Length: 320
Image (tube, rainbow, N blue to C red; front, side, top):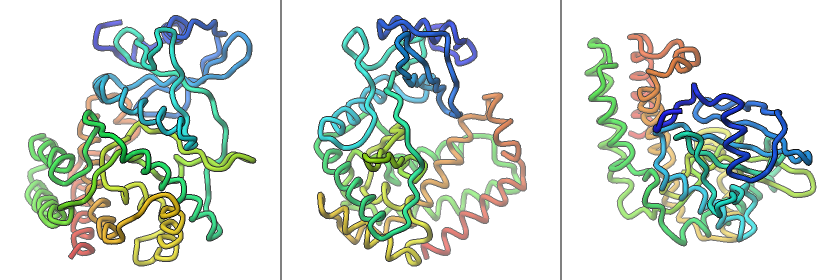
């Protein structure tokens, strides 16, 4: 395998050998792939029957320092008994292995079902989980991770979209005008907003319910530095004005562990706009991947960008 790593060379023999070498444990030939486009995730089995999850990080997506900050955060959370799944220590004492240039980590397999809040107390449980998460997240920085701020992550996303020759001429100007206006409108709202270590991709598919144990927060791959409300808004069933009861109950639970500034609720729609731009920039970075075209067959045409422009204008109307 080459020095920079390539998923096409991550064969079952290669990955099993890498995990055996890193952990010092014998594995069976079992290697079941899990559904993951960004990374490569496999369920493995040791000789004594224990199931493990090996996560191979997409080469070039995160620096080694950024991955280690993800690991450090989950280890710190686990030490405080926040329900997460931290990486297991490897034979060399670290948490990050190398498979011919592809970084990987090994985790205990934890089962659970996707959490579906139905009762008022379910929303309070979510709030308590987030309050505990952020109480740990505010303790130290993560300088190698993405900073969710219009002047950092969103500016970088816009620079990429502007520089790439992916916007058809007929829609380039209206799309960039809408995107730039979004950026101008949301930037002042982030003045003096506290930024801390957050999950970053906190939607319900990343929260499991485990019988007799409670909630489990998984998949810190998009861990970031950002405002606390980022980990709240994607859990809501609707726009904030139509989800006030759920917001109030989440905050009831949250403030059991950490104070929340209600003024930061005004960042929900700006953060939604930022996520829209982030997704487009993320897609733009994947266009050379053969799997991308299969997963996103409608990407890139003029009709696609007209729809994205319409979506940005709709979000602008909401912000106005």
